[in-house]
Length: 219
Image (tube, rainbow, N blue to C red; front, side, top):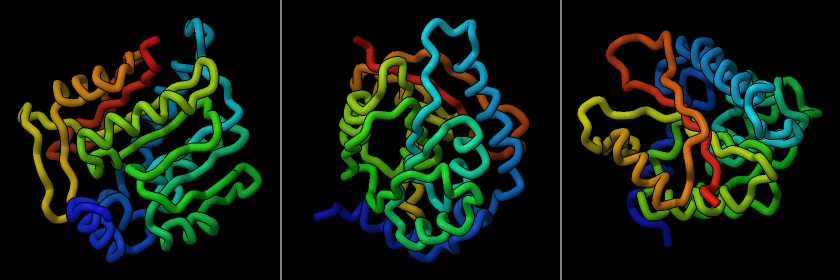
């Protein structure tokens, strides 16, 4: 049985419209800059200067919402993209929102705390969703993702990071925002190493700093 922390998040997102404005919490206007920053990050990871770039066959979009990241980013780089999202309404909207259906693979209706991929991926993309996982579940999730990577595959994390150096809770949507040291500790416990880290630029003042991490199992 799901804990209240997860049940409250399900209830919150069930009331959110299946629109860009809804899934971005009223910040639809940052979407273009967000995608631009993510694209630059991916380009650097694919660059010939990278000694072990991932392949571009298949990616997984985790906490995919209505498919914003898939539509505007991942389908530009990968032959196929799978999506995992616990809100069935969002997944149904994604079918219509993503205008390149030939590139869409499997859509999984699942919370990440329960998700067990049965494929191998070149990139597993996690953005603005990991705050909905408890620390212990996040560590286990990362371990699972690490075992679901193709050779040279990467786990991408793009998340808000607190500037207060403290963990901050949001009782409204049942999530947490972690400080940098907290995230780094979780990566270490999940036996992940940072291949690349970059701060998102061109976001408005007054919102959380956003950082991107490319991670690999530390074998």
